[in-house]
Amino acid sequence: MPEGDTVYRAAQQLNTALAGRTLTETDFRVPRFATADFTGCIVDEVVSRGKHILIRLPGHTIHSHLKMEGEWHIYQRGARWRKPGFKARVVLGTEQSQAVGFELGILEVLPRDREDDAVGHLGPDLLGADWDAVRAAENLSRDPHRPIGVAVLDQRVMAGVGNVYRSELCFLRGVDPREPVGTAGDPRGWVDLARRILTANRERAVRVTTGDCRRGRNLWVYGRRGDPCRRCGTPIESWNLGTATEPERVVYRCPRCQPRGTGS
Image (cartoon, rainbow, N blue to C red; front, side, top):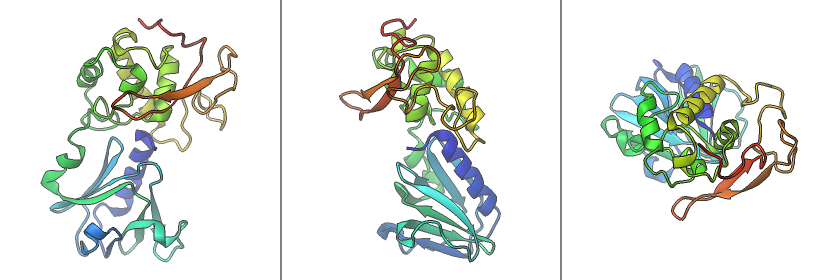
């Protein structure tokens, strides 16, 4: 699933292509909104909210979430699409270009005054104008018994951290992802590091946490099961981490750099 920085870039690209322009084509390819027509409307703006994208029109918002497979592409008029048409969920056209949403996990049209129905549950957006470090730290510390590797992934705590960054955050903090929040260190430190990592990567095509932008050297632990730790050489391990009420997702860890029970 894309991280908040990926969604931020997608929203910025959509904003450049659509904001202030009149829609000449709106084709919603999901049954519920198949008859929606915003031809002639001027797009106010496109913004990201955590992992959600909001395309704001006068009176309405087109809300999308990429989930695992979704993508937004922008094409010049007449250009060939890079994905087959049957995977498109919505096409928004102007005189200059087309914005095509492929395989979107969520696509809906909402009245502008009901945006909170879609994103009101989210915590402070790590890349948003509403960023509030104090509130994010309070959210994180609310359940001290929760594994830190589960808590930082919860979009209600702070919006934008995905599965890649939760493993990288835990490594950089030297904490096992299973460590309870209450003993994993100052919540403000976790929140500050998450903000700095996403901010540093919001304009990058390749996600980097190591400081080395070369592909294959850009991450500390994520996706490196069995490979030697870049710091100590110990093989990286992975397993699924979740709770009884939250889905399990794979997490990566260096056993030596992130020993269990040493959070402070």
